[in-house]
Image (cartoon, rainbow, N blue to C red; front, side, top):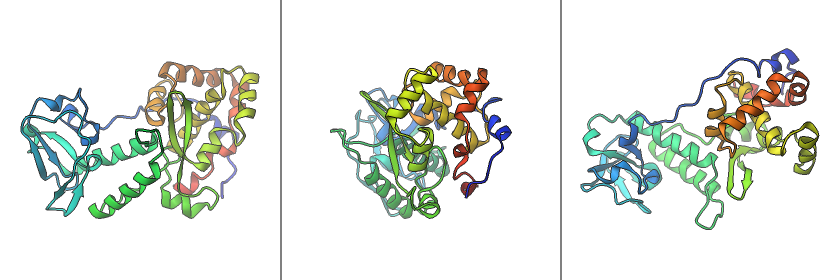
Length: 288
């Protein structure tokens, strides 16, 4: 059950600064999840080993470099007895093979899974496949013996926690559109999806945005998302948070535009009060 939160505590979500989110590239451009390889990859022109993300064992060697996009990969790690696919194998510059660490490769793959799921997985026809890959990742996690689990990127609750804490919320992530053309959005749990939209319909939110002086409902949703992120992380919204928000939540807005939106509530107390309510911290206590 969510406890009553004093207004002063909610005000703390706006002041101060926050850290930006670093992108996991521990070996620079010398290693990447195989699914991420494309025709611009620096691994096209050097010998490349395809490694297991659990033990770092090389299972395949491309002596002449990666062949551009690798649409299909199926090889087994004999040490872990796990079949590898493009989304759970790491391409490593062979010159770096002796220095890569299993734990680091594991983190790279898990971060890739998070980013891919959160941005919404579709096939070439634009049909959703997020649920399918959620199950695939869960199966591979069990095979590796990892403790990774699908989480909502905003409240950070795992799928198991969401199912346990609320029958209404459920454990699946819903795709929240920032834009339909181009199709861009982020997968959030149902509760976070509702919270950033003030628990109302899009039509009503558009009317509210116009009345408050915003271009569209997405401006309101971005501000609510930033405030809930601040509540979850304990890092108040500040001048350095815009880029981190764009990266984590696959925003269509530029960092500069996000910063303008955040400044609008920082500089206008009356406007800020319209965005602050107890729903911003709903479910957070259960995640602590």
